[in-house]
Image (cartoon, rainbow, N blue to C red; front, side, top):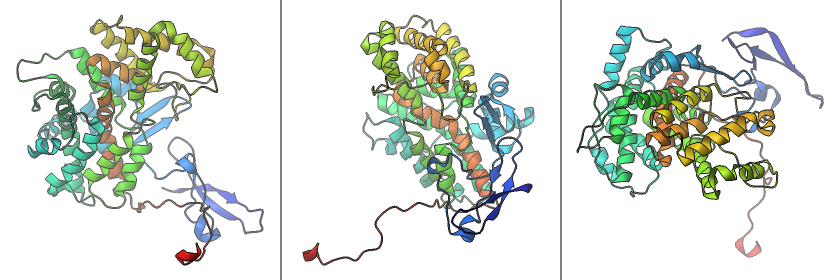
Length: 436
């Protein structure tokens, strides 16, 4: 990182001396002002709740242009990756910086396939949960527990350990998610089939049973693979920042990823597609398609508490590029399964039509986002709503690991320690209890 010749001058109206701040230029995107010496020279901090104007790191992994509706993994547009690559190729890209050639893909796939099973004791660990536990409650426990089973890959400062942990996490997440699902359903766990593709193996783990052979549907496998690709990374979002912050303390990779899983559980983050489906369910209870007008009226009413879920995005001020791809997949899946006339899906498509045409939504750029479509696709495939966020965690794991590895390898990285603006009581003395 080399600073630009141009500097930012910070001046104060209280008579404090002004100071020059270095400016760094990214390969694309906004410049950043380096404020690392601000406190040392002025005794002042910056104040930025939610870090909306603060870059916490430099990164080569993912780039988002919210105004253009652009998403790049290592420079490759998400549209090209989703149409021309599978998930494990995308994993290779995020982890190592380049798409694999045929030999590299074969080797990487074999390494991942070699680690798909989990220790049998995980089954006993699961028994401690109630059958009606939320899958994300189970996942936070299971992912964190991996560090208790794999002592040979828990040193976050050892690149060999990080490499092994990365492969293990990518390989085992589908197995763990399926175990969480099977446990809540009271069904027997299925073992991975390493001859299947990553997405096909996940479908087998989820929906196969020992009584009969499970027949794969290529359209559904392709849809699941696309869901994984579209959710693999998304720059410095809340869960990725959590993984980086957690990892900055030197904790093991499994614990750092478990922290990411916990953060992702929030309805404003990974739980958004679950919230979108629950919203559709609420409209269905109101009376379905015939009541959409009434629902939209409530959404537009400033005094109403009704919220529109699955529309708009904090970063994308234009159409979410992932939503365009997921929309194609959504219509493919509904067509392949003959579900176009299913009441809930008819409702979803009617709501989509209104959002794309109504001036209220168009002017505010409240377009359907990736969560809206991926929730519909997953429900059509047969995945229960509470499991949506666990599948998001499965897909995002590779992004979290790539970001974690990048941070550990950065010579400028330090343990995260945000500052604060203290507005509490000034120093005061403790009085004896009889005088309080």
